[in-house]
Amino acid sequence: MLIGVALLSFGAVSSRSLAAPKHETGTAEVHLLRGQACLDKGQYQEAIAEFNQALTLNANLVEAQYHLGLAQWNLGHYAAAAENFRRTLELAPNHALSYYYLGQISVRNNRLTKAIEYFEKVISKAKTRPPTDVYFQLGKAQLTQGNLDAAIHILEQGAGLQLRDDRIYALLGKAYMQSGRKAEADRALTRSKELRDYQREATQWLLECSEYLKARELQKALEIYNKLINSIDLDDLVALGITFGQSELYEQAINLLARAVSLDADSFEANYNLGSMLLRTQKLDEAETRLSKAAELRPYSFEAYSLLGVLLSQRGKNEPAIRALLKAEQLKPGDLKIMTLLGLQLIEGRYYTEAIRTLREAVELHPDSLDLRFLLVQAYYHYHDFERALQEAKNILGRTPDSPRANFEVGFQLKNFGRFKESKPYFFKSIALDPGYTDAYYSLGELLLMDEKHEEALSYFHKAIEQDPNRIDSYLGLAKALLALRKYSDVTREMEKAITIDPANPQPHLHLSQAFLALGQKEKAGQEAETFKVLNIERMAKRDREVERKLQNE
Picture 1 (cartoon, rainbow, N blue to C red):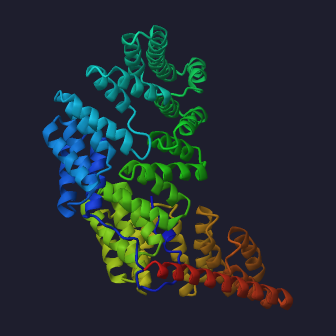
Picture 2 (tube, rainbow, N blue to C red):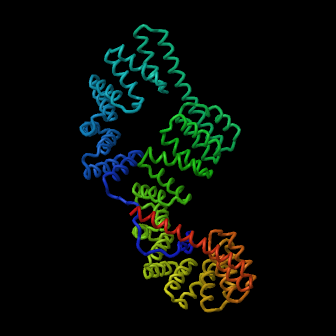
Picture 3 (cartoon, one colour):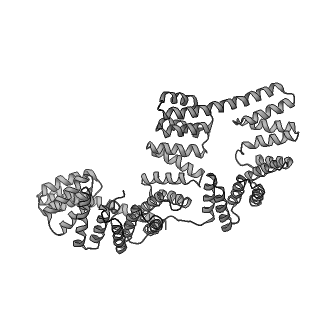
């Protein structure tokens, strides 16, 4: 549960909203990313709709054109796919993957000469390693056409890359056999069989390990772990890492996934799952590195950006968290958890206008979410739109009259308006509904201070401290009441506690100075007054730096 007053600790700020990171929802690039996400999940019709929308907004968006063809290919609409791959090549003549799928379509249409031409272009145009399957496809087409030497040459290239594709070695063995190179054929066929046998065995190990972990037969599961930890098969390492992670055996999961990343630093699955496991074990620096890499590798991954946003929020990295959460929200508009966390981060970043816009939209989508409504109250409050803050708090109370927090929020907003007498019943009801409600005790203590009912105020501040011994505001309220009652020794004792809770807070030193002066200890009073002055200057300078930094982002 998000606590109201916890969000009210920023101090006085201008009601002017600072410019938040840009929130784009309908651009061609956003539709492209959403389409890629749908494609990744096998939602091909939805992907096609998104890619078409992207191309409507930007007809020259290369990746939208290519991915439209890819979605159509997956649906078996080969003629339409081929047309879009050709359009992609008009926009980007070196687009290797478009040549690859045109080659595949040509094979389907028995146009092997054209397929060979396309596959050769894949290898020559690819900026990095081409799709590994292209060596098999090109070798097969050459062999079918009777081009024995060309087939052997390309299949040897594929084998030289140490690809774990048994089909390449099987086809190479066949080609060697046709050319009379029996010894080489035997070696290639043996290697093909080894790969097939290994994959069958590894698949069986993965299934057995999953069953052992479910049955908590850990020793047997660890035997399989030891067999596969040095594997060079990326997919097996990732699959086993996920399996161990699901059983909360995070050390083994992290070792397996780290091994996978070492084999392929650009594997999304390895980076994302390793980041997730590191986050669960609170290895936050490493988790941030892996999740950032995963988001970079797959910018259409809602999962990567949402988890990265959660991690950055936990680490207090407000603006990077907002950027990650905005990206997640673009990819999956209306997600309750993301909109709630985004609203909170926008408030913490003092982007109040954007917070209000986001939270109002979220409340329309999720009218039953009280967390969203409470955040909206806080956003209005920080924006100094106190009237709307009060009205929204009353709306929540109308929905949940027996909610301790709803009663507290109405009381708080009334108190903020200076309507002290009206606010008290709401604080009392909040405590009646929840005797542990710290904020209500503190607020009543403040009201009693205003009424100069200092003894009574003391009891409420003590209650607040009982509920939350680390809340600095309760100690400061206690000090004011004790000073008014001339209990100066008690002030010094309580302020020493407060300083241990928040050493950078200047206020305890101010109250200590007042208490020591009243006790006739002028030297100590002077020292505390000087400490107050130094800490207060540091606090104001820090606040000014934060405001300046955010102004630079406008």
